[in-house]
Image (cartoon, rainbow, N blue to C red; front, side, top):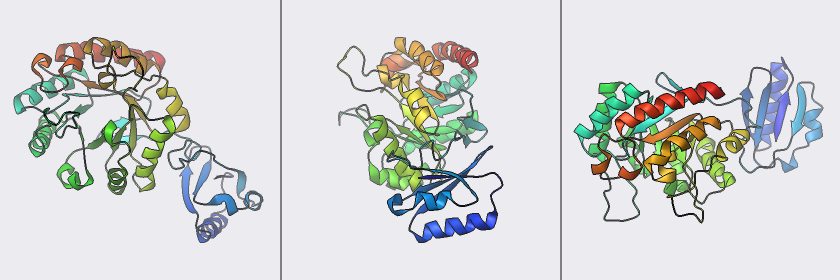
Length: 333
């Protein structure tokens, strides 16, 4: 349920309303916008008399929300959420490019790639220290050493860094990481999502290839309901009958999610298709659809990458692609 307040609502009456709602066991989350203030009510609102609330002098209207996700619902929060990471703002109408190697493999490779993506226009440096692989024999990342190298690259380039967290117990090790990424395989790892709801770092949540939009948003709800409102949604391809590519990029997800939620929406075409030659076109399509950002795998020597080589752009190719993406963003803004 949402309660829309009149402009310049009496503060004492508002306090009395909020106090009464909480007495009924209802959670209240106010959202103050440029034109109106909304109270989002969470809990068992079936026993709340809508007409009683609507009759109050400070109330303009009352509506019930049918969707199971509340805190991430745009009806609860009509204005876009903007997430600040240092001097980078994600979701403010400008395109944010996330770029870096799929996995941190060595200091030399990471530093060369990091400097190149910064020069090419990336605002966030990405790199996996812990890798979730389908095969137990595949490269699993450098772990804590990979995080150390990421922080060193952050210090040398000035770029904020993002890396995937696998378990809530790893949070202390990610203290200096700016954005915590949740992999597609962990999208419904509710213990991890609850732990991330207790931290105060931005979280990039990747959609599971088999998840519906509602399931995706319910996973985000776990984090936001826990108190962490800094969630970025990432579309990274869904599973279909087609096997020419790793997955099928769901460009439809961008406008659909942006209509349903106030959270920023970014797209990862590298993981979606698994083929570097397709990445530029898919990235451009995502930007044209209104994505707040794109995540691109970039490697200084993809042919010898230990992980994600076939989907990674070379550093030179990245610079050309990034420039075109900024042009597309400017055209559709």
